[in-house]
Image (cartoon, rainbow, N blue to C red; front, top):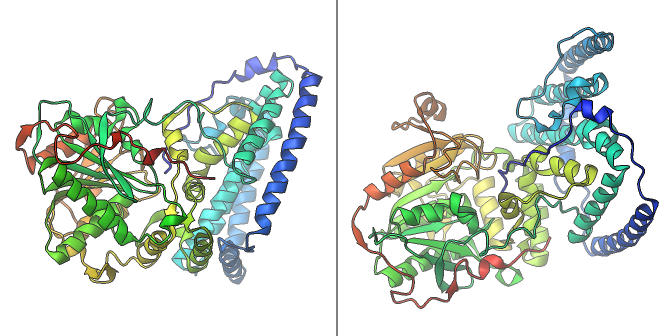
Length: 610
């Protein structure tokens, strides 16, 4: 799921670029490349056409057309807003022309508009130093602002339609950036001059490779897939798989302390992605940290489902996931009670399970930690753009054909939330500059997508995202019980992140108002992944603390105190205080469970198709 930071590309400055002689490409290289291109392109097109012939067409599967038609009708009914926006746009454009003319005459002129400081698209010096490229950049930024002003100022649209229009307008604006095109990107032009166009040939080869891997559908490589191997240089914390069923493997990690906390720790990662984001490298592994603090850590590694699990439901993930893990932990350690962490969708499962357990008067999870987790989906962020009736029907139709949602489809949706960072930067780097992707462990994990069982995913999207039933007392039924989060009295720790595009923190904060027990809420800097995977040794991102939990999240933030560094130590103090008793360290296999294989296990190694 998508919170990566792309590494910077080193480029010569504008002064160096002017001295570069144009290099002629080797004609033999060009000939061989184009022959290879022709052959591979033919195979890609034939394969794509064959798959299209077996797929029912849909004119507008994302239901974008209706939203924009409604927006247009509103604009026509009230043209004053459009006229006002156009006048402002043209006034700025005239000023830009005048300033550019002054610059060409050697007169300094302040820019009419500047890109955001975090915008990496225009970091090359030529965008500022060259009058032509500065004009192109500012023209684009003015046009982008004009589109946003028009789209964002339409009166009378319902909230969901307005959000959809705004989202897809931004997708269009981002796609049209001059940085994405050969003739309007100074860095690409400079590279083309330096290499005699070989960068474009390499880029074309990269493009074809991505199309081949996606079988005609573009599957952009974000990192070098051969640079990492799970269990060898990522996901390497030592441990053993001590239990498995058709839905998950349970890993017990090897202790590194002589004594451990008596109460074990169970981690429920999301099954949208693979668990090793919490064990990426030793230096940033939450697993390693928890083990070093004396926790007996058990990790659920979900299966990558295929058509055989098409009928698996949300209740199966509860019974064969959470409850099966609890029973296995009891067999391994003799402990019936656990502390539990749920990450993203794993946290939603944790909250759902706690509500189900409250109905059955079961009390085995003694503390619950929710990482960037939605329990109230009323304001679910930009993912809600994809959750209307037309799109759900289209999605369910596709899932019914194969029994699951392909991992690449889910990954593409998350990447669209941060298109400039997770799509267009790689288009420029891989296809225009002709670079190979940079080896980056986080992006490797991001590309290692998992499938979603059809029945479970439909239940999740409809009952939670679309209807928001989990947040309403006794509105959601799961395995014979109507759920009420207010009946959950388990102590709860909420960790959210300030720049989260997937689980917006103001929405995750609402979970503190739903659960009935004592709660603590911490807000970390950065996003859905980097804000969570933030070890104390790095101290990269700060966090905010407020002991009070007012109903309004902004009121909470206004009264919060900013603390330096990672939140991990704060969580460890909180969870340890609930059960500080120590026992001799437990080694996997010491209990009643016979280890099956070494960590990270075999389930995590199963790859999805594209």
